Image (tube, rainbow, N blue to C red):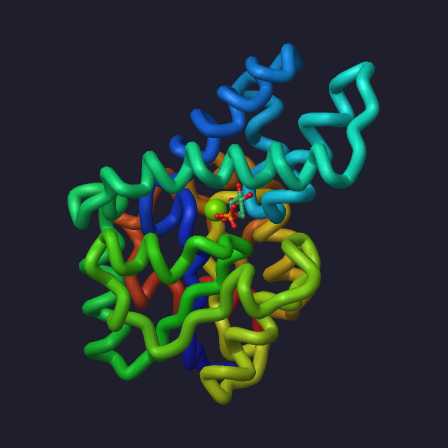
Length: 220
Ligand code: BG6
Ligand code: MG
């Protein structure tokens, strides 16, 4: 099977917004007097805003009404969006631009597959709003990763089969979603320790099409 498309996660793969998510959740946890650190934060990668909040609140003795949760999720997003205002193309992670250009040059389609509802704003801020063939994000899905919905939607929008797609992810939930979708899963950053990924990398500066073809051949 040939590789027809590469689907990129956004936060922590294209841009360093994963750090902003951490900072915003840290403020909410401190406000609620709930212990929160970077290790706990790893469990929030790739999962939706409300599911992330539920993980944090499960560490509290207190019980929260749905209305309280809505307010906390809104407050977290306000803090996060304030941080997003500072974003610029300088925050694009190493290797991303070169990889996007080389995929385009080889006629391999590119898409975003992200759980984030802030995807359009982030792409705008980093100057990549019109760089992807298709975008599937938190605004168009019901189930967040590890459910494969967002990646299957991206493949459908691109008009390719799941087997022809490679997913690039920094989250365990995202790697699981890619595998559940029947796609090749490349883990970058922290997910580079993920045992299920077909390929693991520190960042995208060492990834090229030949490497992807090699992984695809081993899988087939
Ligand atoms: C994912 C992040 O990309 O988007 C998660 O890894 C985040 O940490 C999720 O919770 C939802 O993001 P947003 O921007 O809709 O709150
Ligand atoms: Mg991510």
